[in-house]
Length: 640
Image (cartoon, rainbow, N blue to C red; front, top):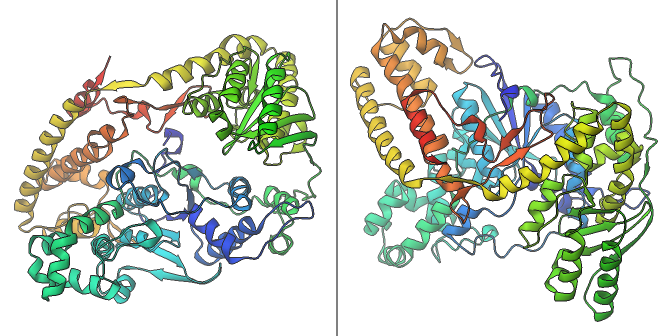
């Protein structure tokens, strides 16, 4: 994450809550009956999620909260098993439309969102929990997915939804053991044997939960069982293990969460302050969350909470479900007419494209219609023009390029314009800019989004002209949008062979350091566990301690660095941490992030910082190490 969010709390002072957001919203949608506002906006999922959030935060009182989202297909898992989650039904439209509301709710609560292309929330959560543990902080994961119980350890617990939206169960190591008769670290093996219909994982036919638990408990691990199927305990089970062992291993491998994504806890942004009630109350008024609104405390800063006055963006819109020849003919005609208009705004919401050429008008169509040759030609003619306006034109260009279409450099990007006018906000959400500069709320339809861009572009241009920023916008920022889009598309060449060789060297160094640490300690132990390391250093070896935290001895870098010159084991532990961090964060991870073309494609963020500098995410190429021999070796893997 960005360095602005890198202030790590003192050891033992933070309680980080990680939300498995998609899973919680899904549960809320199916747990509650259909609910709509008086304007017929579906809200049951958003309302149920907010009810859960309110209850959990009130009960658990976290100091920090992060909302984790799935983003795109989990490529690594699909590469291992092409049928992973293939049976999942398409998301209901009434649910799809509410994720935008959920993001607004999280923004009102000032809870940061974390998502990475091609990664599932499970892996983000596992990585952030590990980072928090390394910082000697406690973590609570809120989810309905039993697969996440594998992250439970001495510093991480899981709050598991059970029935409805209000009943939760807390799982620590003892609770996992009581339910499954297994350690959390054995749950992926267990899932490999029994399978999981919800993720389309077959496991071993005929092996259910009790048998899977018994097999893992008897053998110790799935690998041990596959190496010696006779440990199954009966001829029938032994035969099943021999026949379906490879399938079980694949299901296990797909189930293991990644804990090593290039991601850090955004500590500063994630600090939860429940005092921002005015913004929350305004949103609750808009969404008609009357019972939740009544529970909000009176703002302590004297702010007056009023009902929102923003009227929604309205106009004359047409929507095409292009399934008949008549629909296609009308859509083609509108696209060709739009190509000749003086200005055109494009927007994309989920899989729907919106087009507008004048305020209070627009039309939308499903991107699948581009499979029709006539529609594709008309649309390509439209986006080849040089007067396209969009909100986040670079993101739109990327989505279109993924569908084989090339967007011309934009004439206006309202996200960039709004950010220039107020650098404290990113305006990644079009609705934020519409609310601030047009005093309107934004319904979630693509045609309305395109209309909003048509209206917003001249307004932001007028503001920029008044402030003398027109040249900065027109001559620097807007042209930069196309340049960054081209850079992201081109990617950066990486030499996987160099990283593979470095990985082998680091593996050898880690084994050597581990053996040396064990020899100095007089016994093997988990070097990555602050509790076990503290026991070795400060109880067994009687080294001067740096004090205690709520969970045990303080073993942070500042403590070990102070001891390293006098005590060799501390220097070895610091070196071990450094090489394993570089291996798990960069050396082994970078090759997995390469695109089909073998190149690394980052995202350059033009509106992410108040200072105007660019930031880089997914992965953050501004954070590649440069210090030390290993850091320089990693940089040499990037090919000019």
